[in-house]
Length: 490
Image (cartoon, rainbow, N blue to C red):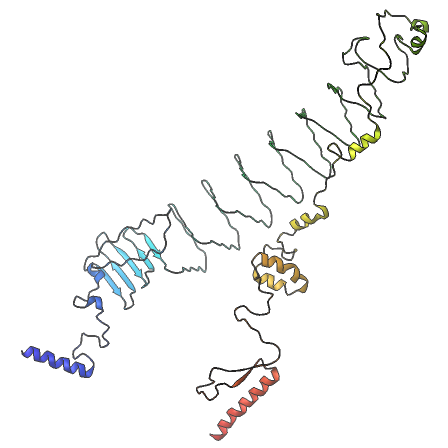
């Protein structure tokens, strides 16, 4: 009963003074914290009743973090310091679970695990700056996963030395822009598979040297066009084969060879002003005298071995032989002249028809024009795409804004800069989008709705914005006079 009276008296006195009568208690009532009411004040993590772990803020399906579950600590081997807001520092010497933990109240922090693994967790952003050099050595494998974009800015060289394979796979586009030279050295084979369309544009020249054999296959068609000379040379044999047709057209066609053969089942050779020079002319039956099937129309200049049929024999029935002209008469087989006239089987080709054929149609001379006006060439020579204003690679937003101060550059640069996303499309607007209004050169008056100073006496006072320099100077002088008058009165 006496102890109960003492406790009651102490409670009444504590209530009057608003502080505990004895020590070991927090006057503010914040400590001990609610989780420790009615039990030991030794941190739960130190006793093994609680495990402090960092938050795993991001995961990726293809990457296993291999974080094993943390084992509870054993008292008294874990030294724990926990602040009121929840910051934690642990030095755990529990056998098999030795670790060091620095944890922020949000779950971010750094942990050195029992096997020496260092785990860093950031629930928001992670920033890292290095004033000097930085070296990273990883003896095992490395996996990196970025769910967002990755931008790298390198002011110096970017060197990559790969001891094994170098594999790149992208689900989108791959764009490369090289301001200067591009060199590619492949010691082995090179393969390229393109499922779509392939296009190469070369501004100046192209040289391709193949020390072995070379083959080009095109299933649909193959075309070579040039405004200059097209030269096809071979130290061996040149084979041209067209299953349907081979056509050649030009104002001048020259074919020269030690042995030339033009063979066909039917066709035409010659023209209105074509001369034939050769050793023998024979018909379709070949070199068979009198029965080769050859026919000749026109005048004969020179002598014949034997005049089998002459104009005189046709009219008088008298044959004039070569013997009558002083030559030896050969043995002449029986020959029955065919009825005359014999119509020609192949018509002659008049000159106008030849010229008309060369001028147009599928067999005509083709006119080749590439990059008329050199527009494509000029665009290619403009390396950075900004009219040659910048010569050291692509410009930054600051570079563009500086160059656009020159009125000569402004019109040429702003459209391209907006297309590349370096300058906002709203930069030409006179009204700032975030403010939505502007002030003119003349002062603008409006009725103020917020009190000026610490009184409401000036509520509704008319305020002038955008005052000119003279008005501003007058206002400053009036303010100085007002402050001076306070000093005089004092």
